[in-house]
Length: 332
Image (cartoon, rainbow, N blue to C red):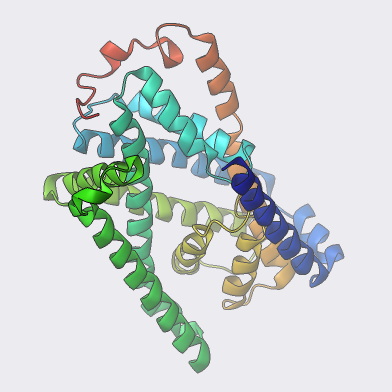
């Protein structure tokens, strides 16, 4: 298992390095540095503030999932844990170690193991589902910028992604009904529990709308932050352009094929923003600033983690888990 993990990490590093090398070789680095030098620092700071709101949005989204699973947790705690997870997503190779850290810290705080693990996975599912829906809606605005050939490719791609998402979701929520002879395996039992919890959250009109709503708000917030960067760079890009172009890029970034999205993000943004007249050099700078902003807002999560380590028996940030949670959820 350890060998397979490191092979996957190495492959991601290879993909990341290869893509970055290819993109850099295709741009004028002199122009890149010129665009960097012209960035309005005040607007760059404003974009960081907007990006920082993502931590709050993510914590709130996760909190609504926990509510749906019967664990009524203070939002301050979910936001803090989400912040720590964001740091480890950047600090650990592979780009998703922060989710495991969130699961571990949640369990240490008194969540049941089932809720600690499944709530994080379902929160991610909610983010992806809301993104797929958003991309399906905005493609009708996006498609008019494309050639006839690219329109076909885009329709085909979004249709395939949507169908795969639906199929995977249906399989997950039905996994509780897998044959009993398969349930002797712990992984299959865990998948069945995840499917049952997913049904509990997504098959209730009173529970499902909040995580999906926060997922949508998060994607729109990122679009706004990127727009502020484009203004700071002096690009002729509108807020509507960003609202249309950024969600498909975010969907591409969900593919676990590079470290932290580096390389994939740059290639996607160069291609997407070319549709609205942005040069390769400008799009590369925009993407790098996007990535660095994400890195900058999550790094302080490391300090939060250090504070977590300093706290002893009272849990994260000296909170007593009994007081933090009115109901831990009794599912194991």
